[in-house]
Length: 510
Image (cartoon, rainbow, N blue to C red; front, side, top):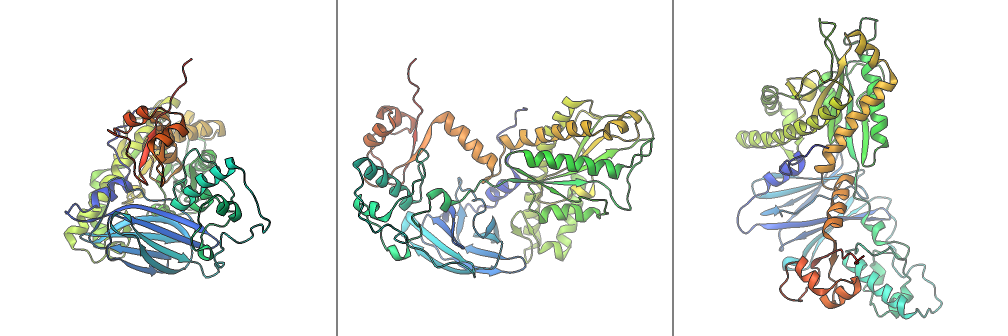
């Protein structure tokens, strides 16, 4: 796998950070969690202080919009993955200093919101209630009326588990536990307001938090199709048929990969206009767009694969079209609406989005070309640039792959061979996997793998609960207190509720 500079950022993450206002005194958006159960979804937004806010919904498609004046995302803020009725979360800046959070919804909802806590513990809670949602169950529901006398060891387990549930901070080493209300009360843990509790006895913390490890969506565009056959090989093989067969094989392999899901722009012999191809990928919320083609040349001996990304000339001309087109200007580019913006500001925002997109496109394409070189000769040694229409998406990293020269009899034969197409698709998948393993979008399966690898390297994270001391934590994990102090750069053993500690991995001597 090629080494990729950590300074390269994905376009969506990069745009979020670039748009964050840097004026003094701004409220910080510190965290955003999505919880879901029984047709109800809850968004919990952690803020550094109390702030005014505005919540409203939009239709066609269904969205919930949260505007936070004089607010900026903190440096370590990460967008959550899909959960409940929320299919995606994105951010924008509708006006200078105002942070906008957009929740894409799978259906219409009713909303309720309120603010909890004060100061640095301020939390904005938004309830998204589906029309067919069930009434909220209480923890006391379905509990056994027979008195239970839990053992001392189970009492300790219940207390530890309930601390996790009540703070919404599951410890990494803890296993999900099903807890009966009788056992909770006998363990000495008070459950406030049972009638409106949000965690039924049969629910676990993991099931409430949901799986935020979304799959990367890879849009695959089979070039040509329908009335457009593309190039034709010496023996009559049509490019449109080769590209469709290759795209289907690539989709099959991507769907077999953990953390990835394929979207075929066309899956039959139909004609799709060029602009519609990348627009379909945007509608599918693709993380990457790949257009599959077969090259052609007057020289029948020309051979090798090529990878193209959008040229700077094509990017600037397309940006001008987007800014001039009212329909495009009302669209969202990287989560930011260009509609009703000052012309110069809109140009800057679009440039930020497109620059980040092109940077990612180049990086992924470089990985893919490197993998294709392992399969066979490349036509050119480096990623090439061209003003192809299908590469003009402003916010979806895009590349076009020329899989070989169909006008070369030998390569025409290879492109018609299912075994060769399988090897070709495998090389492309290897390149995609190589990039996203190093530069994973937040909230994805790849990001979770990165975090897990980082935790394995440096130890695990532990969230301090009320009443705990550093000595107790060290004893529980079998790690010397001095080792924990050193790993966390702490000068003393003082800890506070909610503090995250790194618990180093201590290897037993052989």
